[in-house]
Image: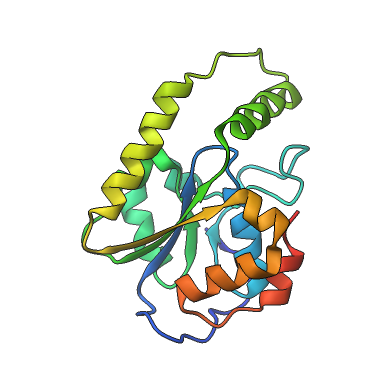
Length: 191
């Protein structure tokens, strides 16, 4: 496991043992959020197993062990005080003994579908029909589950708002995380 950025930023509020989770549907801006957190000075947990490419030229910021329900729980003990990206379909596997602050990315679903189709084209994969209803249902279930957990603080962050108003978006992220972050660097990381 490789840490992403410099040391953990100065704490304003929450316990440094809290795990910051970036989640959302595929192509909803989770990699962009991780880029922003890294630029702002937050320590990340990722391993670069998936190299940057035409779809995500700045990288995916994923941790291979966080992509499996089998290895996810053990990996999260290393994520305390750090940010880690976890797909929406695995957030219900978060161990209850830890505390989490979840940045849940949302994006217009037609944009997600367009982006996913472009992603597959660039990868050379055959076009597939994305089960829109099933994906929407899975995202809603993940968000509902998270919002009912007593060890989870969650907020929704909109991809389009990050693109349109990056500095304001960075301030909203900082306010939710209750950490001192470099807002200008975060805003500059929006792409």
